Length: 428
Image (cartoon, rainbow, N blue to C red):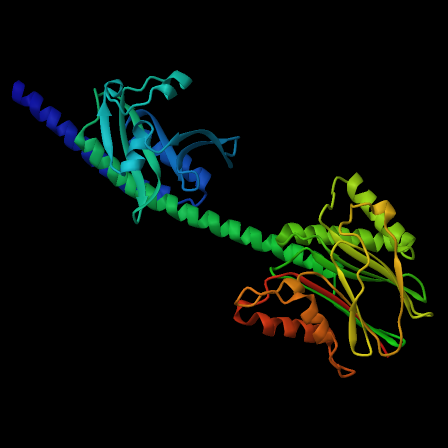
């Protein structure tokens, strides 16, 4: 009778081992069948309770930025979003100890173990008795920690449970890493899509300009250090004789700067139809609109001018740090008129007028080209650009391309890392 009982118990253990190994094979295909991180974590936690035959399970992901373990759960019918429930510091509780030491462990009667943190039981009302816990490691990199809690129909965990759990953890770690790779790839594609969309908007609103209007050749270009940037230029036909000209810099790079630049340049284009012949009034209205729309531009620079072709006169208002340069008789002069900020005493701003003569070159620069640096850290600066503009340019030479090439040669292998906008008016 006694022998039969032993044989029966041993047989049950063997059957359970075979059953669990069979589960591991089927589970491997199950957890690797999805690359959706939300779905995967749900499957893993459900699988833990099934294969380990426990009351509960947890999976905590490692946040390398905060050096914490984060427990998240899926909310909503579709479970598409992970919502953070709580965080555990490295070394805190059993999970924190396992993450810190990167050693698996099982503990029966956890309240007798000094590493156990009872705060979560107090918070949830759940009573933890036994835990098996192991780190999720991928090529030595910590991805997180998984736990099985309170075994069913047996007094506690065993070494066999620990071995089984470690095998499962290796499978789960690979699946989690694959899902993370996939999520990052999707995020990268999403960012690429946003950039492409933002570029299309910016290119449509801020195209390169190269045209001749009678005796005046006007060219304009904005070059970004990244895919898109916060500088812009504009040319607006106000009537047969008057042309509106704008160069702006929001001093914000990347997508945020590009989107803001598109908004502001679009607003100027719309305002030019009703206020375009009055630089001061246009800039004031722009400021009011941006403030009213809760889009203040505290650091923005804008030069807006009106070219009167009949009189060859340019009247402009410069707010911020755009740099208008007049080159006459091969001598460059910086026309230093204007305020330092779009929002600084805007009601006191005044425009200035410049009469243009045959042979003149009028250039408007954003400050980006002046900040171009070489390997020694030296900036190109306004004086160097002005000296370059004093050279004799052949009639068909692209002056903007020449200035950008000059800046590129100065920077050398450092490259141009600034947003640059340039407008040129060349009078024959």
